Amino acid sequence: MVKVKTKVAGCFRTLDGAKNLMTIMSYLETAKKQGISPMKALRKALSDQCDFIFA
Image (cartoon, rainbow, N blue to C red; front, side, top):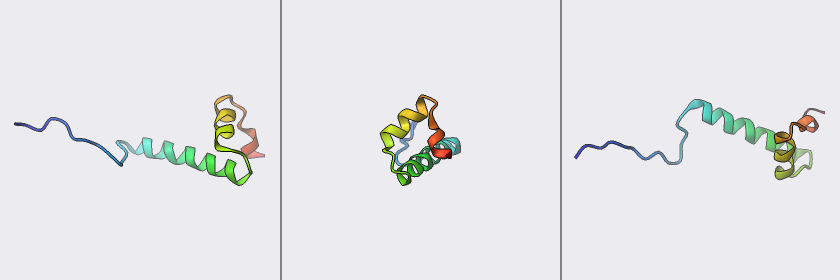
């Protein structure tokens, strides 16, 4: 029998995927240091109101 699929677990499939995760994690960590909850920071980012990070 030929192996046709390899399970990918615990790693990224692409370098872009890893970079995207690190960008999000950096954003959330900055918000946390400024006393903003991660959920509130994500809501602001998705509604295009993320200016608090760069103030």
